[in-house]
Image (cartoon, rainbow, N blue to C red):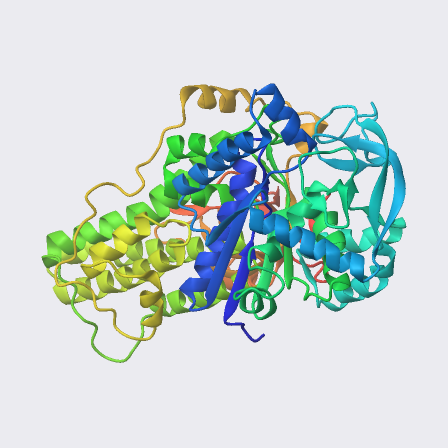
Length: 630
């Protein structure tokens, strides 16, 4: 697959009526990480985010607060900017829909649709949720007749509106989605969008009659542009549609990637591309839709009062770890049921142990036993552990082409696990004690090389800590992309490698109240709803090896769909590693990670035992890895 040299990455613009929470941060950090990865691998990339500031809900909130709508927008938009600054979000532009330039382009775009004959006047009668700022149908309501998102009763609205002729574009748009010209990711969301075409989609209203706070229509000043339409146009108003100096480069000649949550799927995957087709504007290239973050099985929502703010995360874990954790609790694209206590487990497993501890013990040994000087490698033979690092760079790049952000991280964490295993197997502390300085230097060089590669690959998440590690290794500030450019060559480590002045990721103890909660959930008796929480999937064994010094343990590398997992299992008495390759086994995939003999195990396989003989539960070979067991 050929790679473009330029990307344009967007988040949805966030409604200014609510403060940012972890759900907003999830999308925004994902876009920031993707943008940084593009640059890490040598591409140009532009990142847009911002705030959605029109609509009746904003006007009502402003009135209650004793402010003008613009004053409320100015205040709350700044809250988003401040939060993203704290989270080290590096956007290229923060757009506001109250920007005069945006409002002018909205009117220009709507006029184009009108001039082409795709807008007509009609009358709308239906249910309208002010919280969602959208019309909803009877079948979308709860059993109690409430909006499923805000749990409030929608208003019955009847008004004259202007409508967009969506019906003219449904056939051509469906063909573009089916052909992949408009790529909707993941496949489950693409199928969901295609399913919408079977629901007799109607022409939709693009204006409101009695709303005052919005962008007036260019051909009828008595009506304002429907807030969702106004918001969608930000993607082309930022690069100054239709003939601004950046529009051709950013929109026409870049890979345009929209990131968002699934609740705005219809607007982005059907309404938006249909309007672009009507205006003869290129469609976005990729629309990437993630699921909801659920906190203790409930969707995170201001209306439900169960939000986690970015400031909360930073207070618990620091900026870098917050960025890492918010994106790595569930596969990007799926709903994720998180618990705050799980953040602590993931933090200690991946960051404190797998990365931070490896850096600490490696650099300390270099300082104490080699006077801070790593010898340059001799000979042309490349150690396997460094080859694995090169392969990891390629795997991460491939994952990110498909916007598989968590899977990219999984590849890095798997490589860090290999580095830790290599360190333990080579026992550099024994080599130091025996005075085997040449061999000690080789081992520590190889581990340091692996740390440098891992730090470069982790830099889009851990923007500060990885910079510290690279500076300690190279004796100067060094851009992470420079490390990757040196693949295949000896790295020019510093003449005096330093030890970080403070622990990168000190282990964290779970707060007592969370510990108590976790213990209370550990009762033996479970109900059907508890069993339903156990996620069972088919996994294919890709690699297997014995754990050094442990007679009963095997370390397995498993492919679960498109995810790579590592599991340590006590089956060495019953299976030789080679006999497991290619087997399709059943694995519990939503267990908390644990450490066995210092090696992370992320899941549990299922087996049956009879007369001291243990047999793995397997499935037919034609069942694909990743298939769910129910």
